[in-house]
Length: 306
DNA sequence: AAGTTTAGCAACCGCAAAACG
DNA sequence: CCGTTTTGCGGTTGCTAAACT
Image (cartoon, rainbow, N blue to C red):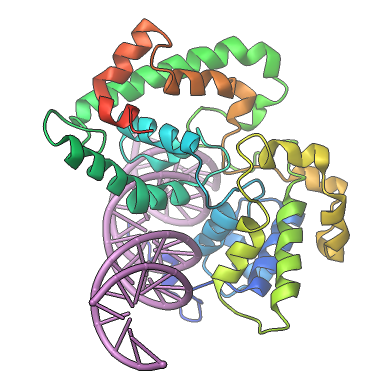
């Protein structure tokens, strides 16, 4: 209610994150795990508000994030999901484990909206389109149906993956218990390594203190678009010997790192076979009832877009 | 080549929901 | 059960680089 915004404090830094700040944050989270954001600024000495720290972590520093170069496949999924869910980016992002909601939102606003509009203009007449969501009650209904369906899927797959699914209570990442760390956070070292490597590369020129550098260095350039299969799920197996080599002392891959896991993204693949969902989302002929649902909200134009 | 416009993206802000005591 | 605190989400802004004139 009457609580003042966390960022109103004087002495709180705003604007792009520097690589130094990134490293401090990553080191801290590696040690303590994500969560309890309130205490992060005080404990790290970062002149950032807790919100800013959390955002930076979830959108850029968190391991397993893929940036840039959305594949056709991902585009399709986003379009379908947006038609189904509306602008519920977090829910959409939960189906694209390597993408952040912010990234998806930006991509939608800058690319897909235009693309669909163009297409819509091309086709000109007729009905609504994917970029024009239907009534809210319909969307809610669709969402509810989806959630129910997913709950069912979860229940069915519970046996197989019960040991791994503790980290996530529900399918969407709308709500999540705090301080729930799963077993596979080793990939954090990857991001840190990339961060440091690129920082080293860039620093001789100038400590280009802008978040571009940080963001790019930590993510995009070193993770070109190899498709879904790679970065997130192969981190553990490939487990970057080179990454840990280049990593600083205090951010080296340690057993504790396993504490660390993908905290802010639901681990979809652990509960519902991801390919199943994809199939359902993308395969128009998948099943009759599903098709009906999808057809309720998805314009054919968007389906035939690609 | 310089100035202007546009596009893309990182980050901020405010609100709402969840968690906590 | 209620008030407070913390976290998460979606909309929006502002900066930078690319494209255009």
